[in-house]
Length: 176
Image: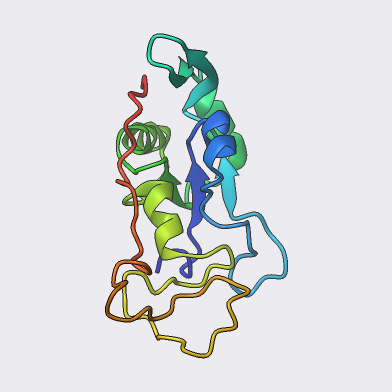
């Protein structure tokens, strides 16, 4: 995978968004073969804060474009040959806008992370081990019951252990 090939992650989501859902592509493990390093850089393409909207009775993002996005990216990745995976929540609107900006800046090894942080965290755990979802799960009939595990529940509870996920596409209309 690109991660193992030395690609670092440029997370372009708003800080408020990262804080609210904690779906960050990896906990900054070191590059392959190195003892230390920071493999995820967060440079929001949109600045946003959450506020409660009484009309919709939900929290919404108040958004402004990050006017210094390009300068922040240049500081985070000074080498135009850097291998960069660009991620937003779902790898669509903001990631594409960031890829276009990086291309205009002269970066050559840039890719978009398909599905963004939402699908990344389904596929990889916090220690960069591939999750086996959706796949076959081993039934554990000897489980003591003190920790969560997938286990068989018999013929009357087939859906009890089913893994379900919400749609990975971000429904927020981001101003890019």
